[in-house]
Length: 300
Ligand code: BG6
Image (cartoon, rainbow, N blue to C red; front, top):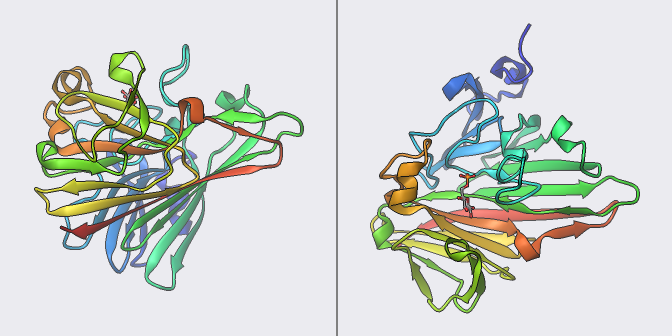
């Protein structure tokens, strides 16, 4: 019998020249996508995008070569889907159960302009038992950019669905010391490296020079990552998101993380879009919340 998460179960979604289904690292099923402009790689576990690369460019996403690829363990890098809570929670997995679940691929479409679009849904699971009934759909569209939508619908008849969501994206940068993050000046944030101290961003161009773990609140604007080494500007456009999280573990924490190589902190930064902490969402019965992000890049 073929296990429900085997790549063989997804062969029906293959599209010649566009989508290939194969066994990835750790024997986990993954999809390889090819478009007129780019390639991408997505694991069914977590509906986790681990690679997106435009032809002739360095990868846009960072995935650690020290990552584990184990059923039920988070993948380190790419785009982890954080839902229904962000951060740690006693007795529960950090950052929620969505990134650990085997998502179900529901549709795979070649779009006429030369791209590919996939829709996944989060299956029923014991971890959902204590939550009001909901559906979670995840749409990934790959063209010359990477566009993602996470759609949560409250299906319960009489209870609000209160949750956090976040696309915890790891970006590949040439050198963290030659990288700035722009678009957050004047925004209030919680500094997780200092017991959630409340601060206000003073810099137009943020440089990362130490462990950085910040939840920027009440900010809906686009963010840019300016990478002097790769001579590239990455745009993070978002809708339905009031929080931006910026994270780099820096050297000591990198060494303490078993699934992250010691030097990885030099070539990555997480710029995460979602609704976390006081921006958590309360969805009335029958309503949906849509979190949309679009990642694109241009030469400097
Ligand atoms: C960030 C959090 O979003 O994710 C950090 O703000 C956390 O506090 C980081 O360390 C990584 O989390 P995890 O669970 O993937 O190791």
